[in-house]
Image (cartoon, rainbow, N blue to C red; front, top):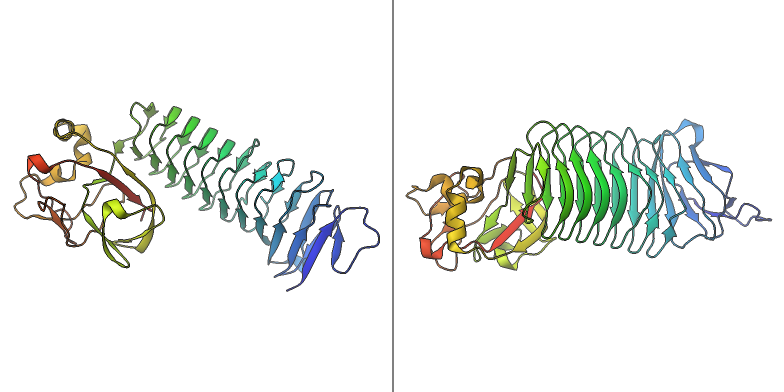
Length: 367
C-alpha cells in the first residue's frame, strides 16, 4: 500500500513520497500517512475522487510544533499514536468522517477530539492518557476504552448505545452520554465532578473509593453497580452489586475455574454471546450479620441472589440479574460444599447461615 511521510511545510526539496504539512492531502483507499516530528502546519485530508476511502495516520514521535488534523467526509481514518507522544497542542477533527478509529499507547497527551458524527468512534488509549480539552462523539454506537490513571476534562459521548470504560484512578470533570442504552465503567479511585447519562436504559459501574459529586441516570431504567458507599445519585432506578462466594466455579472457554482465580481480561462464557472478557474483579468480606440485614431490605433484595428463592428445595443455582446481565456457572460448589450451580435460571438455593459469607464480585461485559 502507498506510504507517505508528512514533513515540515518549508521542506525543499521533498524526498520520495514526502508531502509538506499545510497542503490538502487527497486520500485513496489503503493509503498510509506517517506524520514526521518536523510537521509544523495544519493537515487536512480529503477523499480523492469523492471516496469513500479508509486509510491510516501514524504518529510515533512528539512533533516539534503544534498543529491540527482535519479529516473530511467520505473517509474513515485509523489513527495510531505511539507511546510517550505529546500531542497536547494538536486537535483532531474527524466529525465529517464516515467513522473513526483512534488507538494511543501509554503516556500520551492529546488536545481536542471532535469525533465522527455519523459513524462509530472506536477509541482505545493506554495508561496515563491526558487531555485538558473537550472531547465529543457523535450519535452512533461509540466505544472508548481508557487505561489506568486517565485524565479528561469534559467528555460528551453523544447519542447511541455507547460503551465507555475507564481503568483505575480516572480523573474527569464532566462526563455525559445522550439517548441510548449506554454501558459506563469506572475502576477504583475515580475522581469526577459530574456523571450524567440521559434517556435510555443505562448501566453505570463504579469501583471502590470513588469521589463523585453528582450522578444522574436520566430517564428510563438505569442501574448503578458500585463498591463505594454514599454516592449521591438521582434517577437511578436500581443500585446493586453482583456477587459470588469464594469457590464458586465459573465456566470459561478452558473449563470451569474458581471465581477467586479470575482476573480482568479473562474470558467467561455467557448465556447469549459466547466468551466475553471480564471488565473488573473485586473482592471484599461481608460479615454474616450484614448479609442478613441487607437481604431483609426490599431495596437490596437483588443483592442477595439466594433471597429471591429462599424456599427452593433444589441445591442447583444459576444467577440471572436484572437489567440484561445473565451469569452462567457450571456444576461447581462453594468451598463449604453447600451450594452448586448449573445452567438452570431462576433456581436459587439458600445456603446454611454459618456458611453464607459473600467474598467475590465479578462483572463481565454486558450482553
